[in-house]
Image (cartoon, rainbow, N blue to C red; front, side, top):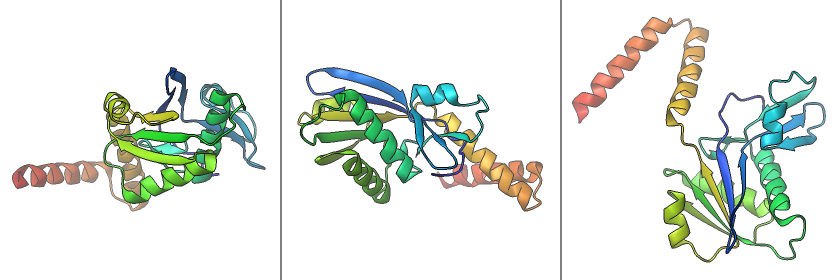
Length: 191
């Protein structure tokens, strides 16, 4: 499993054909550091976060709606699949995954591989919003909708990383602010 990330979890909605939404969870997973044993997923993992349990780590295996920790993502998707089917799945389902726009080919491949590992027979990746996906992709058994409606949170996370890096390199925060203004001016003049 990956080291602790400060990334905000994405929201995952799971819809079954002809039943609608059957599960809504946060993309969180709690595990023991010593052996990687999965303790909780989703809301249960969120409840464990911050309780200072010795040897327990809570992470989001997704970052900006894409896989950041492959192993943890597979475990999370398997858990969610088992939860919605209540372990009564006799065949592997066709899964449609609705992701935020801008997913790269590498990110698509990682997501497809994780879903196959989680038990999918076929995978369709759809970039866009849930309403568009549901209209266009009718031939599915399971629809995973991965959303992150807080883009400012992503920007904040990246700025924290930039400031940490700058500090490690001996660059003061005031200089980072100047660099951001310079980039803003460069982008504005290029338009």
